[in-house]
Image (cartoon, rainbow, N blue to C red):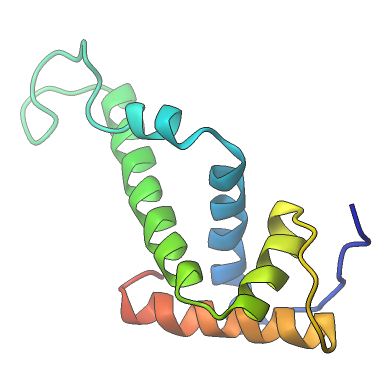
Length: 124
């Protein structure tokens, strides 16, 4: 694996960096396994939309919301051109894509583009 690009993100992009890190974790996992884990627990008592519930149900709902956000970030990243996509894969997932130009500049541009697209999709 090549050397990791070092960039300093402005504070205004820290939020999307956190979601891209979550996206990278999701990319490294078996997507079928992640999708099987979505939805409400198979053996939960009561209704999670009201009435009695437990901390486990709440945690599961939070995880499900996070998963939906990661999928939205994945759609944003999928809309990038090849050079910006490669920069994100190299930095966050550990890919070995080649591209021309200044890697740090391209990576910063990619993060900025994903942030703009994510904001339009309601990710914050």
